[in-house]
Image 1 (cartoon, helix red, strand yellow):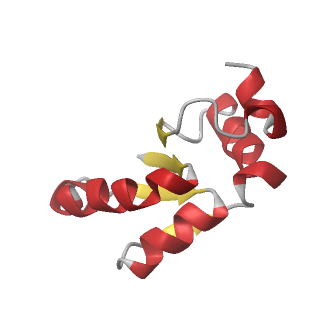
Image 2 (cartoon, helix red, strand yellow):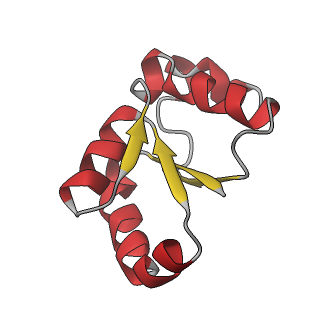
Length: 95
């Protein structure tokens, strides 16, 4: 199973905390993590194996959305700060 992780800047620490709290499940279920660039870097620093795409604002969100559309990614965990950079992130305008 492939799970995408995306977190706005103010939520990256919470994402890493969530991953740490569920580390055993992620390992036991053989979950492959994919992410936007900076979120992935934070998760890697915490010891997780992550396939990183571009940073969200420069296309990483769109890359992950395409994997969802192609049914390659099974789930997206998105921790956001409401309305942060909404005008700078066109993929969010679709939601």
